[in-house]
Length: 335
Length: 270
Ligand SMILES: Nc1ncnc2c1ncn2[C@@H]1O[C@H](COP(=O)(O)OP(=O)(O)OP(=O)(O)O)[C@@H](O)[C@H]1O
Ligand SMILES: Nc1ncnc2c1ncn2[C@@H]1O[C@H](COP(=O)(O)OP(=O)(O)OP(=O)(O)O)[C@@H](O)[C@H]1O
Ligand SMILES: [Mg+2]
Ligand SMILES: [Mg+2]
Image 1 (cartoon, rainbow over the protein chains, first blue to last red):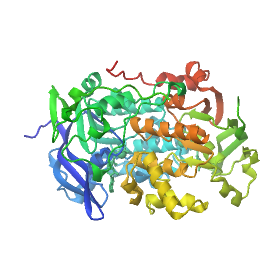
Image 2 (image 1 turned 60 degrees about the horizontal axis):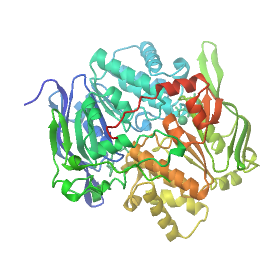
Image 3 (image 1 turned 30 degrees about the horizontal axis):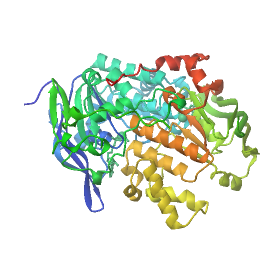
Image 4 (image 1 turned 120 degrees about the horizontal axis):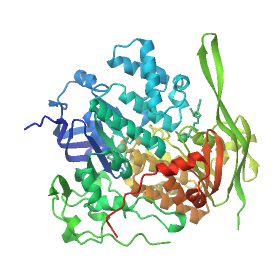
């Protein structure tokens, strides 16, 4: 049943973390496809499982993680059963990742030049000199000024936003077929952010790179993503074409997320928030709507038992029936 | 109704030397990361600092918390010159001035559990009993939207946004007078961002806190700050009332920043 246009296909993926003696589920039955040349945006509350989901693709999860179910196939090959040696060939080459934590992929004891040149030479047979030129070019296109000078510095001598861009340069250096970008622009102001987004778009158009782009910033994905996954509590709660979701957000979480973007100034009172907290993994209710506690003003009967993802219009999926009965409460009480 | 000045900088400078290899050996080149910055921050006020990546914001933050030494200029906190203080005095300053760091992972000790991370600053300053310190830590965790049970975990077991909230809890637990927030909410999704910003505002009202708030997000800065200083290549190029700058920016970079703000997505709600 495999579809040729799918570069990556994740099916029913569940991931547990072992803690002391119990296992907690961080990712629960997540399925999605990424087509060639497509940009998939993943949005979700902090702790909802975005990073764990994408890190699992490269099989780089920490030791206490268990893949309990599911499959991940890349170019029709199953990654979960692939040998470490083969995986290593894929990483940083066919599939590259921009990590949320810049320091996981930058080595503090080597200069940026050292690391970039190594990365470039890993997949292209270039002389040191040529590789160095390429490294400088990459730094230039991610907007680092005076790259010839800065390339000699160590990561800690860069500013936060510059480090983030070095990682982006590193990740695109191999012209990957799949680029996974985990919050790649959080440290960047809108002008640089725009430059990076344009760069990613160009990459996608020129060499047909597929991109998985994680962000908490809906405004960023609005501009970039073809399709969206919205995650809450380890599950997908809404998915579909980005345009459709922005035009018609259905799940209460998605709608509240859009509402919480700051607009006014200090005099305009407290920001609207989503009441309550993300439940910790061990407290996540299993067979009821996970978002239920966050919208206590919606009656219990609105939710279903064992809520499922359902296609409510072409390609637009939503979990639970509560969206039909959801209404937005009066914006936060003014102080 | 202007309140007293809490922090003041005079011609504050920080230079870094970049070594450059040339045909004729090594040549040093000086990078002026912070250049003659003079600013005053009043008690109870929130000063926003915006500027492009690499313009010197974090360096400025480290200078005023005395994490690094300036190349020139002075910093006064509560009328005492902190740039002239010796180490023991600087240490006691930590109780009054706290910083929330830009990189949420790198600033948490990976070998310590969250409870230890949170209670340690209290312990160092000899505040309260062990039991009270623990209680305070739990309370703080809840305030930033985490749970009690998170206290027994190590930093690597948290997501990016969760780490950032632990950082915020650690900075606020000492009830400092001045908090330097270096991109405190940029790793957070909007709803948690809103929670954290609201928390910072509540604490400000409750304890009359003063904030220096570094951010690249003008929407957030406009919402959160009374005054804004715009930094460009190490210098302050524009400063004033937040709303005035938002409405009528003067410097080119500020204009560029405002123009680039994505048109907000309108929700379908009325
Ligand atoms: N090694 C680990 N051991 C135990 N729990 C973990 C571990 N790593 C992550 N978790 C938990 O798994 C959940 C999902 O984490 P993940 O990093 O995927 O969140 P996220 O959606 O990327 O959030 P953020 O936006 O804050 O980065 C969180 O509750 C986190 O605390
Ligand atoms: N230890 C250091 N050694 C050499 N140069 C440094 C060092 N720390 C910072 N710099 C340089 O100083 C300049 C200012 O850096 P800083 O971290 O203050 O920027 P920033 O405004 O915080 O940027 P960002 O928004 O990207 O975090 C940068 O050009 C950076 O490369
Ligand atoms: Mg994450
Ligand atoms: Mg910085």
